[in-house]
Amino acid sequence: MSTSAHSSATESVTPTAAVREGGQVTDRLVALNAGYAKEFSDPGMDARPVLQVAVVACMDARLDLHAALGLELGDCHTIRNAGGVVTDDVIRSLTISQRALGTRSVILIHHTNCGLESLTEDFRQELEREVGQRPVWAVEAYSDADQDVRQSMQRVRTSPFLLHTDDVRGFVFDVTTGLLREIHSDS
Image (cartoon, rainbow, N blue to C red):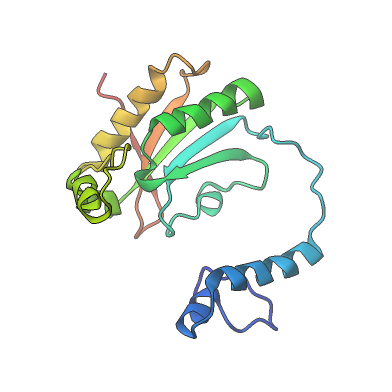
């Protein structure tokens, strides 16, 4: 049984099982959404996060950010990518989050046993050989999550586009214990 599927008592096939049985996981998820929509009611909130915080985290499926941080719908903006690294697109999202939607705090979360720790920038060359075109983006691979959190905090704190850089904190989430460990700046 998959722990990531949300199904009612009448639903017995998880998205993972649907794929094993030859089904399309997207079709399964869309069907599950129809059930969700039947029970859905407009929460009556706008896009401004109640807690005025944006969380930048890895896209890893083991991170349930709302549960891990005790967050409810509407509490925060969540920005996720491979590694949770601060890229130009993350700065773009944070800038919109702050300037248009009122966030003031930024939380950065990397995690233990991240897939980016096993990659290198050679990944781009491998893609170029395979498809005949090199990606314009960097892999942003790293071998030290703590150091990459520090680098990400520095990128946020020095961005000229962000209004609020005084409350930027970074953490590493332990995927085996569920605990956050705070990373402090070198300075």
